[in-house]
Amino acid sequence: MEPVPRVLCAVSGGCDSVTLARLLRASQDGGLCRLTLAHVNHALRPEAGEEEAFVRRLASHWGLDIHVARTDPSELARNRGWSLEHAARVTRFEALERMARAAGCPVIALGHQMDDQAETLLLRILRGTGPRGLGAMEPRTELPSQRGDSFARILIRPLLDFRRRELREFAQLAQLDWMEDASNRDLSLLRNRIRTELMPLLTRDYNPRLVEALAALARLQRAESEPVAHMAQELEKQVLLSEEGGQAPEKAVHRLTLDAIELTRHPEALITQVLWRTYQRIAGPEVALGTRHMQALLGLVAKCRDRSTSEVHLPGRVRARLADGQILIEFHSPRQAREFGKKALDGSSEAS
Image 1 (cartoon, rainbow, N blue to C red):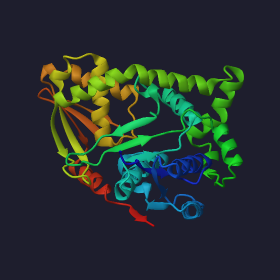
Image 2 (cartoon, one colour):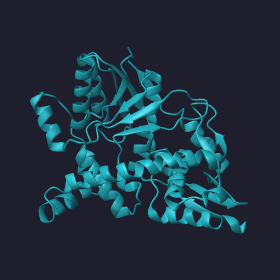
Image 3 (tube, rainbow, N blue to C red):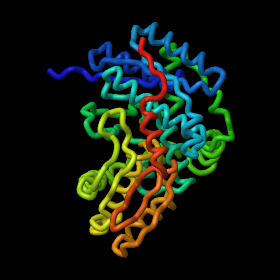
Image 4 (cartoon, helix red, strand yellow):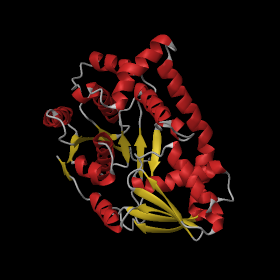
């Protein structure tokens, strides 16, 4: 009989994540998993301390272990040229990976639901995206491991088929307490304007089932692109010439070299997938490439037989350089690469 999976559930203190934690606790009671809670405190808002204290009380009340990480995304935002919101998302993801390892949990559960999925897809469309971006958030993702790392990690989003209102109704029936995130009302953030202004307008005037339609589009796109993704994974192994960094779990990859000439022998759909995958191994899995940047990368590949030298600057202060028929995807400078490698160890984490 195989052991039950160990699951780390990310709990912000909001309704969705508290509801997910409650459902997973019921699964643990039924012998289906072993649950640990996790909370990331960025200390960016006055109520951040209250939210951490709330999640700690919740874990204590339910008799669950909890890991807490405190991070400062502002430095990452400055170093990488990101918005503070995006830097917080990336550092939160990295902190969850560290806590999952510390807790011995190969599965990380996130509380994203169908409304989040629809908002993510619409946000990507507005900013410009390709076929892969239209798949939005995946319900299950196997995270890539660094060399020498045998700890497998799987990211799951069990609530993607449920609407926000359904989860709130369940939480009320289950008499759950949660905290409201005041930052969700900040209309200077594009996602919040999409949520509070654009989505209601489109739902009222164009399609009353807009959320379901967008979620269905993302689901169909993922299903159709899955075979291409598998082929791209195999192609990546063929064209990857060298990899710097990542020899140990705490070391980040900071430079990848691809055989661009070999890439040109394959369909563009495979090439874009390989370029996306290798970029995210440098920049992180929470970072996306827009259409403009992907077209620039494809332009580098197209010029590889000319033996010319060229480079493209990508989000997150990453660059792609073409030289001698090879493409190097790397941070702009060795100093930045060292800082990024060190970042995997930064941010205090504790278990109780």
